[in-house]
Each structure stands twice: as structure tokens, then as C-alpha cells.
Length: 180
Image (cartoon, rainbow, N blue to C red; front, side, top):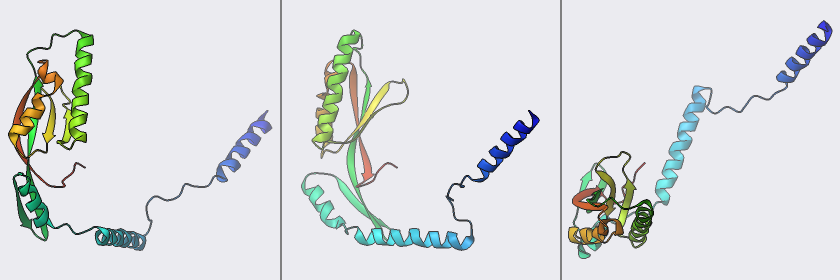
């Protein structure tokens, strides 16, 4: 029995020595780190070469011609084009006493309305809040006037049913900005 146990241990150790170690994820030596950093820098440079230059003045003129409020400013070697958007807070409405079937139907229509607004280019960002407070969600409208944003927000079936009310605020953000 003792010999069998020693044989099993010996075979197990030999088998574990045959395993190939996983490939390195990080360079070991300092010169490899420098080489990796230079490669990242080279890729960034190539990416910048491939990106088309945007004529900020032309984009700003087009937006202004379409009735949008904009301004641009320069910081270092970067020019930022700021645009006025309209942030709509979807707040808890006075009529939330619908039964579960009716509430589900209203919610389905609410989501379809938000999807249609996005597909038609009226909204840039939409989402629910993560807590159970008075504000249930936000919608950032990309419209030329606050009146248009307010009108589109009030067409929401959940607003019409009284489950939600809207509160609209002007909000400035850099054109082309994104969440990371």
C-alpha cells in the first residue's frame, strides 16, 4: 500500500511538471516596457492620421443655421464645440394607482416612445435612475428649442397617463462627447 501511495504521488508530481506555464501578460524587463509603450504611441499616432479633421466652424455654422445654440472655445491645441441640449427629468406623477396590467401596458408604450425619439434623432441619452427617489429617469434631448423638447417629452404615454411628469432644463455639453 505504501508503494502504491508513493507511485501515485510520483506520477502526480511528474504530470504537474509537464504543464506549460500560461503566457506572460506583462513584459518582464524594463526595455520590454519601453518597447510596449512605443508601440502604443505608434498606434495612437496612426489612429490620429486616419481620423478625418473636422471643420468645427462649419459644424457650428450648420447647427446655428438649424436653430441650435452653440459656442466654441479653444483650450491648448483643442477646439471644443459646445451645444445646448435639454435635460428632461422624468419625475413621479400624481396618478400611479393603475393596476399591474395597465401599468405594464403604459410602461411598454413609454419605452416604445423613448425608442422612437432616439431613432428619429431627438434624444442623445436616456435612462432610469438607480434609486427609488422622485426622479425616475432622465432624457437628454437634442432639439433646437426647449419648447420642442418639452412638447416631445409631454407626448410620452406615461406622462399622458399621469404616471410621470416632466421637468426640462437647458444643459450644455461638448459636441461629440461620450460616456466612458
